[in-house]
Length: 208
Image (cartoon, rainbow, N blue to C red; front, side, top):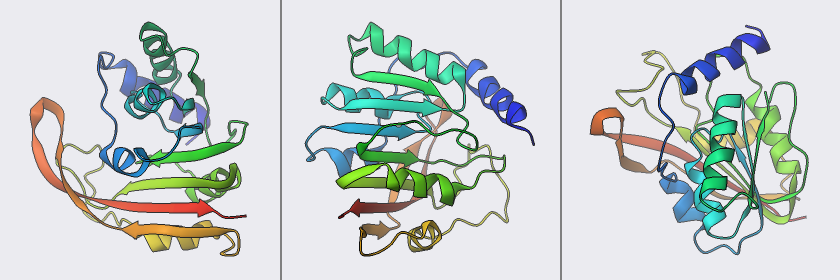
């Protein structure tokens, strides 16, 4: 599939539904970041912007990126309407072709899954190298399939966090895995439907 196909697909996903008026942050972000001092953060695959807006409200300077220009433009507008425009920069990037510039104290990638070809390991490796010393990379992946997921492939396999870390291939002399586990939670989907799901959580800290 071409880059144009991927952009068209995700623009259709976001353009085909009303803008989120009060998007919520991901629970794994909240539990990881609440006690951290604010700095510069990169939100990969920002979607409706719940994580970016939550971070900005806590004083983080956010670079939010998504393959969908619709998602990025909506987030930028929402940030301005909330008085957070100075803290949120929303950009459209197809991570197969471009990566945002800058150095960050935190990079978060929540559910960065796509039906299109994407070298996730290369993207996450680039994200890790964009960290300042002491910065953290938080990767949260699906560990199970929710009933409302766009991907209902019964044969889909979700790599464990340690596998994801191994595929990224970071030098242990410069990066330390601080967390790699698979907690469960109750998720709420469209129409208020709930289900127990598994998250695969990887937290890596740059030490040098």
